[in-house]
Amino acid sequence: MVNLMLKQGDLVTIEIEDVSSDGNGIGKVNQQAIFIPDTVTGDRISARIVRVKKKYCVGKLIEIIDSSTNRIRPRCIVADKCGGCQWQHIDYNFQQQIKKTQVRETLKRIGGFSNLKVENIISDQDLGYRNKVNYPLGVSETGTIKAGYYRQGTHQIVNLNQCPIQDERLNPLLREIKQDLQKLKIPIYDETTRKGVLRHLCFRIGKNTGEVLITLVSTEDSNAVIEQQARQWLEHYPEVVGVCLNYNPHPTNVIFGKETDLLAGRLYIREIFAGLTFHLRPETFFQVNTNTAEALFERILQQLNLQGTETIVDLYCGIGTFTLPLAKKVKNAIGIDSQTVSIQQAKFNAEINQIDNVKFIQGKVETILPELTISPDLVILDPPRKGCQPEVIESLLSLKPKCIVYLSCHPATLARDLKQLCQENDYQLDFVQPADFFPQTAHVETAVILNSQK
Ligand SMILES: C[S@@+](CC[C@H](N)C(=O)[O-])C[C@H]1O[C@@H](n2cnc3c(N)ncnc32)[C@H](O)[C@@H]1O
Image (cartoon, rainbow, N blue to C red; front, top):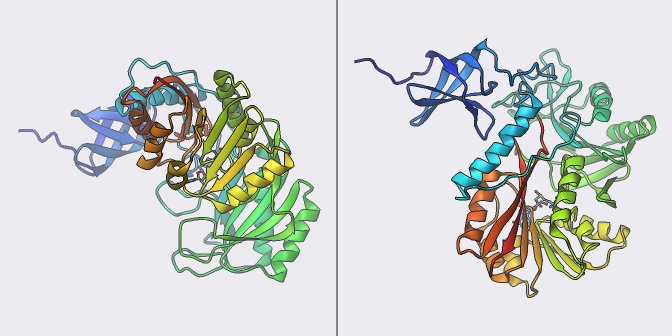
């Protein structure tokens, strides 16, 4: 009898039939699903089996036998090495189609929502969109400093002198700041030996103001050498408004430590979002794709038709990105976030925009929401990838706002949470709007609107 089971090392020919939610092409051999990075629907390829699991295998692309019409030449010279983007080889129109389908299929498979109308994906620039980058630093074999993303599935840095998805105004800075760091001769941190000082080079740019903040993450406090260099950067680059040093001595993959010191200029950039001014510090969350986030926010506003009489609550509000523009359109707004520095910044952002019908509360949503004594008309929530804790869903169901707007960067947890919100017919899912915050990657953002049925 012929053994149909695939083994590690087997070479197979596969037609790619689909793309998985984590961005890999999927094909089948002997009814067994095989996931192959760097491929796309319509490719005919040969692949080497590199991992065999109970229900699926993972393959490595060896040769493209027939290229899909959805395949393009990557616009990044290190696309085949760098783990920053997975989809540089996929035509942008097709990337948008895949994301829309994934949102619809995930809501159906996990949430049980069939026959859903999903709006066409909102998108803006497919390159040059990132307003924030955090590059780990390393040293090459010849002793030069490297900065870039890790090679997929490793901690080997792929050195970048430019990156096509970051705001293009950051490209010269990336090249030149790295050269200056080389001259300073400060040891670069090695995560294996846990020795060295400089760990990350981070940039944040105001898409609408052009202001740039440079942040160095270091295992040591600042010193005279680095402070002098910071002042030079400030003098040399008119767009740079601040240079900061974040202190992180811990052996961890978390980039930022708790303390950030100012080396030169100011500790924040200004950004304009939805007509308001925001101050952004190095370590606080802000949507990475300003233009698409703004377009998505406008789209939601159109759907909500606010009257100015509403009380709203914004859960996981960050620095008030959505709370503050919404506060301008309603009677009262409350924002809740667990990060102390975000809440401080949100309060400050309210002040500089002269918005006084808003209150920000620091704490975990799962603790604060059950204690709220008000009855909001609208709750907006934008949790991290893992979605909401069960207590948050329970509180929403007992608070019974007329309308819930849920923004999510992970369709699977969105579908899980929506299923619970809708299972007793308390809410109906009325509007599903995907948005492409992260072109060239498999990530998709989704905003949905739920209306109360009771
Ligand atoms: C995806 S961000 C959204 C921020 C904000 N809505 C915005 O658009 O800028 C998620 C936010 O949730 C906060 N967060 C994470 N877990 C939390 C929790 N359990 N309770 C409250 N806030 C939390 C983070 O500090 C972060 O600001």
